[in-house]
Length: 306
Figure: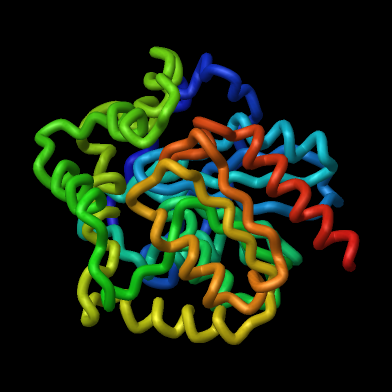
């Protein structure tokens, strides 16, 4: 597998994102060593929140949330998915599979960082990957915050809005990362913010990850990831793990998943699930401080219970 690594100078002068970068090498038995970039803030001994981004963003998406969480006494860790951000980028679309992305994040969180009692915050692919991590490593997690995400098995149709995005990514000769992020926000990104979303990708050779991800979403019952996702549903719906839904009111792609998750997850039954108003698909961009407050309160409540 051929890996590309974005030059460090691409990440200079990022707006409101001056956290130091850290790196962890994860070793896959078949694919070799892949470097995962991440940022973290907050007390090392505080309750831990794992912030997983989705397509086609990177940990920059969480810049409004991390300081709020850190100030609340929470250790906030935001890795870049492989193929995104500061992480290594497999150069071929075929190198990206759902199973590999789950394994890369598992190895990062548990082999490299040895995280325990973690609260997952997953949005977009951060939930598709993160909910698999939770289901397959229940003993490592204290709770879940699902934000504009789901766990598709291919047994139900995807919304038209998702197919429009899927087709746009497939057909674009040049993938305009910042434009896709902007299309999922209600606020207008500044030029510096748009440049930050483009920063991990010096040219089209670096964009195999963003190009691959839409096609990895299970859209038919016999998709390669469908069986594993069904197994994850089975585990999660038989678990009492606290499960909070914090969806926005302006995301047609994932809106239908919020009531399904609230009904299906036993750990969601006695919780009050907030709606983040005035936010689009990337609610971290539109209402990051508000979402961080929700996550902080949930995490502190879990920690107080012991």
